[in-house]
Image 1 (spheres, rainbow, N blue to C red):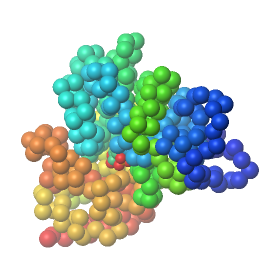
Image 2 (tube, rainbow, N blue to C red):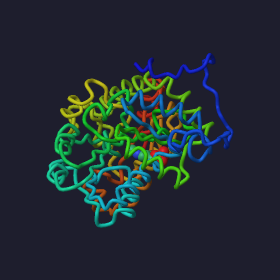
Image 3 (cartoon, rainbow, N blue to C red):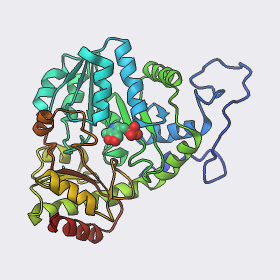
Image 4 (spheres, helix red, strand yellow):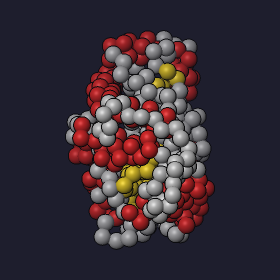
Length: 371
Ligand SMILES: Cc1ncc(COP(=O)(O)O)c(C=O)c1O
């Protein structure tokens, strides 16, 4: 799927890791954004990763960061510098929301789901930030409608595509202005590296965000850039496998009566199923969530799982279960958590590349036994 994006600059099949922090520089050209002279500004392995990811996302320019949060920080700092009003879905990764609240204060407007709330705010703000598939109940915003509302005026649509990855959705090809990825998740895919990416086509904004990365000191390190480059060689295989297994597990859970509710955009029962089909076709990602009914049941599951790792992440070869109520969405009030479906019984399951039968028998075992 991304064959033409794999870097082939040299004869070596595996790309080199450039660990030098300084590069001989005699001032021949004075474009700091493109020049490689100091490791906090640019690095050849990081640049290679930027080229690769930009190609995969259909972006004119790309910047890689040391975490997904660092990518979002650069964007939010830039929006704040210009006094922009920003609308953001209430249902996003908890740290993204906390960071936006701290940096933007009264210039931040939280809305949706329900998505009508967000759509009616969209034409009154300068920027909109949403996740393609939103944490943790896998809600899918009306991305096409948001792109329409934003286009033709001075408005930036920012899409955090971490849960989908470019295998399932490429926001820039569908009218978004900026795509963000936490490389830590599907793109690197092995739980051994943190990273972030911003892709966009506006050169002026790219240069400003490069400046923020330099000033915040948040470029990815060379070995980490290499690990991401290695991980993305199997991205498509992993995402397809995880998505197929996640759909099967979601269906079985829903039919089993072992849990109170299942959230997966590939299920007809999901409130955004029709929109997800329009946007993604027949592949819906490797993350699902389910409500066990109580805090006790959810915590008991986390204690008993063996094949599935109890940890606060997603998108890797390992299957991972997390507890959004106390981890990713801990910062929200209990009323708001409740209204967004983030109940004390909710478990988020990121399906890895494990065998579907092995995963199902683990889930059946831990959900059937009490205590
Ligand atoms: C949707 C989303 N965006 C951004 C991030 C932040 O990524 P990182 O942990 O690489 O900083 C996360 C982390 O879980 C996430 O789920």
